[in-house]
Length: 88
Image 1: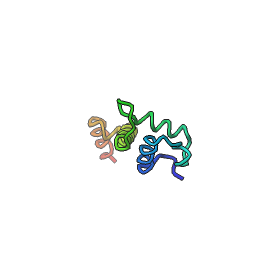
Image 2 (image 1 turned 90 degrees about the vertical axis):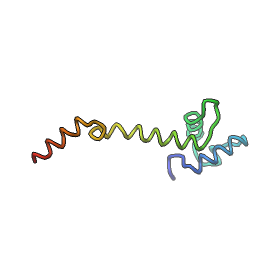
Image 3 (image 1 turned 180 degrees about the vertical axis):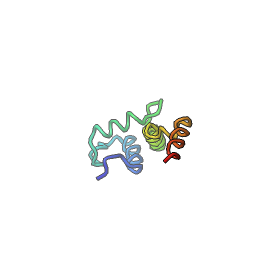
């Protein structure tokens, strides 16, 4: 079973929140995972929208992966590495 919440589950969370059901049990997720999902991805008005959750997830993923792309993000470092590699 996947550990991360899927886009389909995000849509289900949205529907279940509006209906007031016990979401974690129905989706076979821990209550803390659902709580984090709702808290992390709510709008400024306190609403949970699956589309916003997907966009925020994507932004977090891009941000976290950017730190591993030091050469790509630094032109000076990139030129230095290419120059040194050409010697070999």
